[in-house]
Amino acid sequence: MYLIAVFGNLLIILVTISDSHLHTPMYFFLSNLSFVDICFTSTTIPKMLQNIQTQSKVITYEGCIIQAYFYIFFAGLDDFLLTVMAYDRFVAICHPLHYTVIMNPWLCGLLVLVSWIMIVLLFYCTSLGVYLSSAATHSSHSSATASVMYTVVTPMLNPFIYSLRNKDIKGALKRVCGIVGIKRPTVLGQMKCP
Image (cartoon, rainbow, N blue to C red; front, side, top):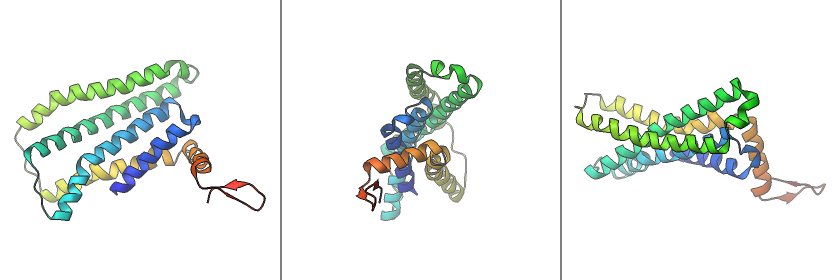
C-alpha cells in the first residue's frame, strides 16, 4: 500500500508538471496535495516497516518526537490544502467568468505559502497541548487500525479520488505515455505506446 501511495502521488505530480494543459490552479493545488501525501506517508511507514522486519517496537525519544512533529505537520497541511482546493472550486463554480482573474498564479502561490505558514503556527500552538495532556487509554488494536487508515489508506486513495477518475489527467497520461514511452512503429508507420 505504501508503494501504491507513493507511486500514485508521484505520477500525479509528474503528469501535472509535464503536461501544459494541466498548468491550472486546480492541478497546481492537486500536485501540492500529492507531494504532501508522499511526505505524510513517509513519516511513519518506513519506521513501521522496519519494526515489522526486525520484530522490534523500539523508537528513541528523539525519533518519536521528530516522527510526531512531521506527522502532525503534514496531516495539518493536508487539511489546509484541501481547504484551498475547496476555495478554488468555489470560485470556479460561483464566479466562472472571473475565475482566471481571481485565481491568478500569484494568488495560488500565496495560498499554498499561507497553508504552509498557517500549519507551522498552528502546530506550535496546539502540539504543546498534546504533549502536556495525559494520554487517554485506548486499545492497541483499534489505535493501530486507525493509524493505518489515516496514514496509508487515505493518501493511497487520494490520487484515485482526485485525479485518475478525471478525464484531463487521463488525457495527460496518454500524452505523456506517447512522449515518454518506448515507441515502436505500427504497420501504417504511426507511432504508439507499447
